[in-house]
Image (cartoon, rainbow, N blue to C red; front, side):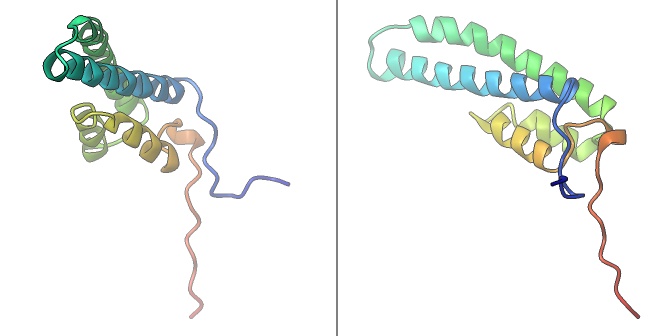
Length: 123
């Protein structure tokens, strides 16, 4: 059976890259939070902060760069771009941004987007 007309096309290229980087950024954020707990609350070790601090720093920068490239290439507009960039600040929010952008069809090229059909009212 064919897919409904409002189905979002599968991710390819930049959309897939954005999704992967968003999940990596969230994973490293979680690792950094665990590392901070181990160092500052449990007082066990600072190894988690040392490792995940570096990984998260790289993932944070990569997410910002990829988000800007995708925003320009896929014509997100100012508010969508700012929301995606702001999602990198609170922990694990890049996952929410990725899911939102995927569901709204903004992680596919503009020419591949399927716009929802508008209902036409009878006069």
